[in-house]
Each structure stands twice: as structure tokens, then as C-alpha cells.
Image 1: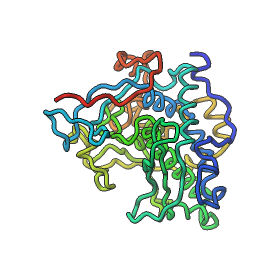
Image 2: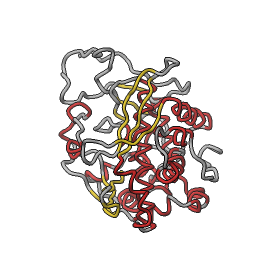
Image 3: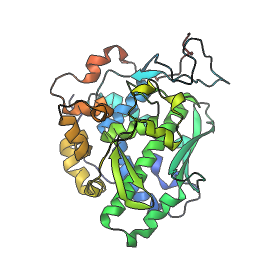
Length: 355
């Protein structure tokens, strides 16, 4: 484990995914995206993001219960070459258990993804939409697909009004834009690896949605910010029926929908947490000392330490709850031992299950 869980001293660099050359037709990159790009770079290289990346890329597939909209008792073949039935994937390693070679391989996939995406700002017709990733066309090398990632023009106007915002509001906006960057690039990763196919369930998740999955696998919950009022921010659980209000068709991407809580559970978002994440001092000191745990907000930390088991605590990913375990073995070693992939074979989309 030496050299595996050691966190390198951070420097404010920008990942190839988020450099200015990736943003098309945007003249104010330094105002809007530079600081979020630095934060997204750091979060993408956190132990928990690398863990999710490893599982998504090198995890092992297994069949899963089908979403309600899909026939349950007959074979479904790919429609127009596109797989329509989600699988389940997992790996036998928890956060902090990747080898140096595992980490290097995941990082390389993230670097390679930069050749397959570009960002732009869009005036969305749907109110409340803040970002989206669209599968564009096959890449020139024949490996996967290119993607276009769009940001809401309303959201991108917020950094221009810094003189009207407090330092806490500015940091909250930067954190939120960084999270949208991460949310959308993992959809692009799925397109690159598997083409325009349906996404899969990570471990026992009820909803197959990579963007929310990654965000919750970093912090334990996902942040919400009202772009009309940056001070209106909270942490919330994402796997609820409330997703249908955000235009997600749960009948197609959710299994065991009867198990989903009806509403999101919302918790206080301390803007000082955003200020901390946006500072070099945090990444060069506290993060170096504490690694993954330093990125867990107080509400999630308190819930993970609680002995009560509720819909909320179950809504926090097992990989995050596992950070607070006492046992020597991780949950992944115990629960997903048969999902080992020592050769790091890239996860692929298998034939549809029969019946």
C-alpha cells in the first residue's frame, strides 16, 4: 500500500480536460472557468474519484434487475446497435486500495478523454438545466465517440458579477461549476468507452446515472445551487423519485423503483466548505494529511458516524460510509471479491441478457 494512498502535494495546475483550448467560442475562460477548472482537476485526482474511475473503466459487469419500462421476461436485443438494458458493475477494491499501476491507468484514460470532448456555453430552453453532455459522433481513430458538453449561459454569467457577491458566494459558484464539469465529463467517458449506450448501475445503486454517481462518490451527497440565488445551496441525496422532476425517465434508468425515497433529504451547505476547497492552502496541508476524508462535508460525516440506518444513510454510497469503518477489510473486498480484474481489461458492453 506504500505509495498508493500517499497524497501528493498539490499545485494549482489544470487537467488537459479543462484547459482553455477545450472551450469553443468562449472568450472569458479566465473569468468563468479557470478557478473551477483548477478545483475540478484536484477533485478528479482524489482517491474517491480515482476509485470510481477505476470501477467504471475496469469494473466487472453482471446482470441486474431491469428498469420498469423494459420487458422483464423476454430477450431484448440492442436497438440500432445501441444497448438498452443497464448492467451492474463493481470492483473488488475500495477507496485508497488502488495500486500505483491502477492509478496511472485511470489517470491516462482521463487524459485521453480530452481528445474526445469540447465545451461550449448554451442558452437552454428548459428552465433549471445547468449542463448536459451529448454524444456527437465517432472519434477519428475509431475508438469510442466524441462528446459536446454544454453549460448554461445563466450559470456562466454568475462569475461576471463578483463585485456583487461575497467571497463565500464566489467560492460556492466556483465549486458548483467544477461539479458540473465533473458530472458531464463522466458521461463523455461512458460515450468514449462504450458509444451511445445506456449507462450501468454502479454496485447496488438504484439509478444508472454516472454524473450524479461520481459527485456522490466524492462527497457522499451532491451539492445543489440555485443559479438565481447562489446563497440558496444545500447538500442532498440524489437517488429519489425527485429525479423525475428534473426530466429523468426513471422507468428506463431505475431498478427497484419502489425502494426509492419519495423526496430528497436536504442538509445545510456551509459556504466556508467551498472557500476551503477553493484555497491552495487546503490542498497543500489538510488534504495532504487526510486525503479522502478531508473532502467529506460535515453533514455527511455525521451521518456516516451515526449508528442509525435510514433512507438517508443508505443513500450515502457505501464507498463513502466505508471510510468510517473499523474493519481491516474494505466493503469491496468482502462484497465484491469475485469482481477482481487484475489484468485491467476495459469494461465493455456485453450481449443483452436472455429472458
